[in-house]
Image: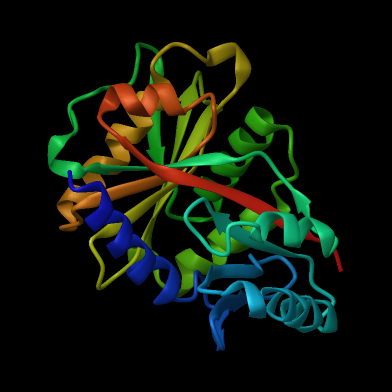
Length: 258
């Protein structure tokens, strides 16, 4: 894989040329900043910026004004190769809070082992209706200990408006959801994104995560997508590396509360 070429395409297609991630969202381009504005349960934030040092503080202030004027918390999704070099420090000085840094990883679908099956006793169920969404959200809440209200809202809206752009799956053990994951497809690009992969603690280390990656990779291959991308946590990075994903950089969410 030509890492530099893939990263350039990623920035062009998914960040600078971003599309709304749901029916209640819109993309706004303001100078050298691309942001998404959504309803309170959607994702609000900055997707891309191409700032010089002289304009960075003003641009940061403009984004704060825009989102706080709407009463929205928002995220500035900062990548390690974004400029200026001290943009993270400037965001902190402006009142943002940095969350844990993740690794941007990409794999060519054709290079992955798509035959990985779930371990014994695990059944994978596609989430194509509200009942399936409930399974995914329940597994997500149990795996991460977070409230799944916003996730449920976003998934139901996406499935209702454009079901061909999202693939969600829950892993069941004796009928109970023990893991879940989703994939978001971006039409007109070679990229499909893996999101939300999580397994309940008691079921980790058994190969469920790998099986869910393979499940989504098969779906991406069937739809003609070339690359899978994921923001990998420290826990998932070594698993993804063994599966054939390449680290292309880092991304850090900087959160500003309205």
